[in-house]
Amino acid sequence: MEDTATHYKGPARLMHWTMALLVLAMVPVGFLMLEDWVSRPLRNSMFVTHKNVGVLLLLLIFARLAYRWRNPPRLKPVELDPMQKLAAKATHFGLYALLLIMPLSGYIRVRAGGFPIEMLDAIGAPSLVPRSDALAAFAKATHLYAGYAIIALIAMHVGAALFHALVKKDDIFERMWPARA
Image (cartoon, rainbow, N blue to C red; front, side, top):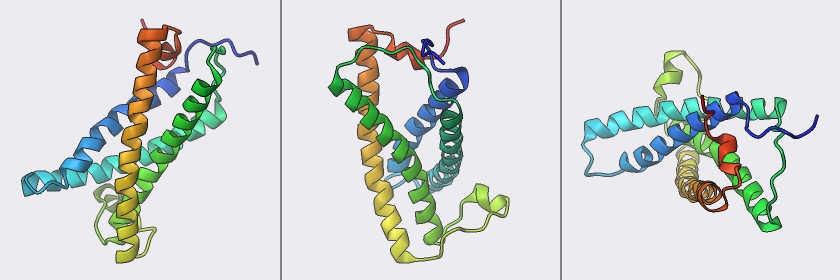
């Protein structure tokens, strides 16, 4: 099949933007819920929301990876210098990896720490990890550092998208932008 498409397919764009909005909401909530100055009732609500949206994000990243595997993008090539190509591939790989690492490390931290994940508990899903303070501490650190890494990669991704949209004007940004009516 020839690579002539100028936009990603609708499901790919929908999953991209849904996940982007959820992740962009999760990052500040993830940091705010750790702050002592935030009231305890609000922090509790943030923890519940963060855990349950994390489960949703894990399901979405699996769906997104499955969709991409079954429907590889066949986009018309765009001229990029080799360093830009390498940076784009590395950033995308890093984002996909962190979109798996973040919810998995969060899940392990919560379950190994003996805490509930309300959405999963409501459907009777068993814990897939043993109760372990050491495992919980490792997963907590992984989740924190992966959080900083995903912020950096999101900034790079958004910066590159804006560079292509506003400076180069080479239609790369429009490939993932929601379709116009």
